[in-house]
Amino acid sequence: MNSSMKDTAGRIEKLFKEDKRFFVFYADLIREYGNQDRALKILKDNINLFTDYSTGELVLGEMFFNQRKFDQAEMLFKGALKKDKTCVKAMKYLSVLEEAKGNKAAQIDILNELLKYDPFDQDAKNFIRMNVPATAAPEIIPETPEKEIKHSAPEPLKEGQAFDPDEYFSKINSSDDIQVPEISFETAEENFKKHKFSEEVLNKEKSFSEDITESLDSLTKSFITESKAAEDKAKLTDYSDIIKVKPEVKNELDLNYQDKDPKIAKILSELNLPSKEYKEKMMALSEYLSEDPEDYERQVNFARAKFKFAAASIKKELQYYSKKIKEEPKNEKYNQIMKTYREELLKLDKDLIEDLNRLKNLYY
Image (tube, rainbow, N blue to C red; front, top):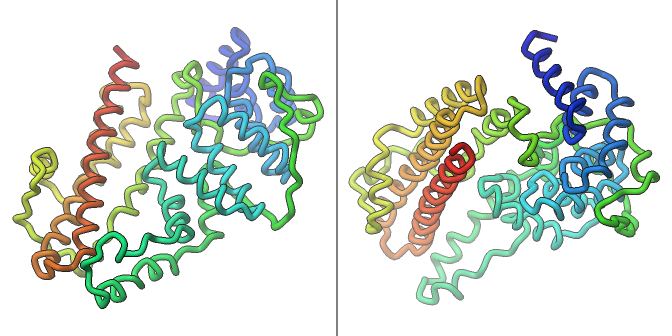
């Protein structure tokens, strides 16, 4: 154990001894150093003492899931989600469980809810695209010629053919190796009473998953310095799903594109570097942030860098489809794609403002 890890371990142990509310992080710490039985005992002894913490249910749920005790895991994930409706990790696990039970409609509902809080989750978007029928073009645009509709229809199928469900489940970042056997699930009675769990449930687990810091309660968040940087790093590639222009055609751009919306035009005018350079800046700021995840200025700079990388990527797409529209002005498909990108850019700007305000309120 290096000196930095020892310092972190010492701080968390001291916090736990002074205040039992840090039980989840202390349990995870000693689990990481090999004492899983002790970690489990700490978790079970304290989870019912602090019923307002969703993290406890989340950890136990992961433990049960890894031992394939899916009924208990489902109850715990639902308990965590009831306390924290933004808990993306719980939603991901519940999505996998619904898929294993064959409840595709329920799974899609969960993933749609997940996208409200993590709109750049590519796996969720791909799964929904594969399983939700697209609205027929003639209903939206009656004047579009039938020939053009038939020509553009195969494109979603081509995108879907590359999607591997097994790969989707293996990439869920809240577990290193998620395997869902094809088994039938029995309906479990939800035995939550004031969010307390019976000893029968608490005494069934032996191991922790490797990542419990994705959904942290506000009290403990500031004491685990690695968590914020890890979360930010995990999202560095999340913008890849919005880049649709193939490399070999990216030189076919309308470099004089001017958007009719003044707000969008202003955003685009401030993006003077290639998206590659914005990405490099974002990654450099991510490393800088990891050195001090609680520093306000570093968090602000990283948030702005993430926005500029995503916005620059969208700018190139707008330039590409602007040229396509000039070449084929009657092709409604291109107009619809342009509309989608413009809406996404405005949403990115809105999310950035909300993030900056959240940080300001948190620190000042």
